[in-house]
Amino acid sequence: MISQLIEKIQKTKAPICVGLDPMLSYVPEHLVKKSLTEFGETLEGAAEAIWQFNKEIIDATYDLIPAVKPQIAMYEQFGLEGLRVYAKTVDYCQEKGLLVIGDVKRGDIGSTSTAYAMGHIGSVQVGSKKLHGFHTEFITVNPYLGTDGVKPFVDVCNAEDKGIFVLVKTSNPSSGEFQDKQIDGTPLYELVAEKVVEWGQQSMDGNYSNVGAVVGATYPEMSRILRKKMPNTYFLVPGYGAQGGTAEDLKYCFNEDGLGAIVNSSRGIIAAYKKEPYAKFGAEHFGEASRQAVLDMVADINSVL
Image (cartoon, rainbow, N blue to C red; front, side, top):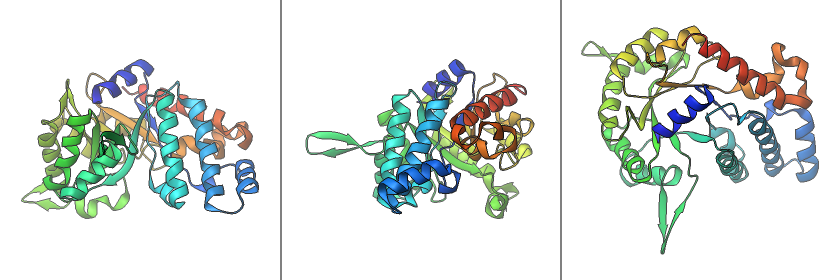
C-alpha cells in the first residue's frame, strides 16, 4: 500500500495530506444554519453540517493532493451520526481517488487489536461474505502495548495490502514526558523507532514498509535522528502550520530522494478562510480558501526539498 501512496505523491508533486478534523466551530455559519434548520438542533443536524463542510473542501482540493487524514474523534463527538459522516467522508474521498489515513490511534492486544484492525483496514467474515467496515487504506496505531498490540495490525496489512503509521515522536508539547525518557541511555522514542523498523521488515512494499511512523514536525533535531535510524520507514508528519512546525523544520523528515514523508495540515487548510492571508475569500467561499492554502503549503514544502 505504501507504494500506492508514493505513486500518488509523485504524481501530484504534493507530499501532503489534508487533515479532515472538523470542529463545528470551523464550519461557516451559513452551513450550520442550513443544516440545523433542516434537522433541528440535533446531533444529526451537526453531523450534516460537518458533512457539507467536508464535501466542499474535498471537492476543492482532491486534484491537488494524494491523501486525506480524518481524525475519528472529531466525528465520534457527534455519536453514531458523526460516525456515519466519518464513513461517508471516507467513501467520498476514495471515490475522488484519494487515499485515506484514518487517524484512529488504536492499540490493544489479542483479539481486541485484531478486531480494531479488521474494522478499520481489514474485513470481517459474515456468513459466506467478506465485508468491510470503515475500510481506510491506512490508520494510526499506538504502540504502548508492544508487539502484542501491533502484530495484529501488521498481519492485516499483509493480508489486505494496507498500511499503518505507528506513534513514535508526536508533535504535542508534553510528548517528552514519556517519549524522551532515557532507558539505559537511549530515549524511549528511539527504542520505539527500532521496534517499528523491526515490525516494518515483515511488511515491505518496495523500498519502503507498510509500517510507517508518526514523527512530529515540531522537533526537527529528533526527526533528523529518526530519519537516519529509519531509512525505509515512511513518516506521517503532524505539527506543520498551526502547531508551529515550518517547512525548514520538517525537511529532515525526508530522505535524499525527496520521499520518505507525508506532511499533514488540518486547521491550516480546512479553516483557512478564518486566517488573515485567506480572509479575502470569505466564509461563503471557504473551499476556495482551502484550495489556495493547499497550493501555498505544497510550494512551501517543495521549496526546501
